[in-house]
Image (cartoon, rainbow, N blue to C red):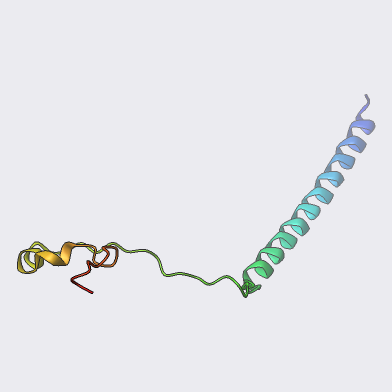
Length: 85
């Protein structure tokens, strides 16, 4: 290749790089815009889905357990006896 062809080839490559960089910048702007729109879009709530509170386990202090030993029983899940009814 002669020098004129190399200069022309380098010029063409430089132009392609410039166009690719412009395209990349436009793509990045479009992605940022889409991300902003996603963050601004309110989450749709389903009418038949009800959120629940998270489950928490209660751990008694040793002093409380000593003062009231029945407090450690899971009284919400223990069925009542006939006498307790």
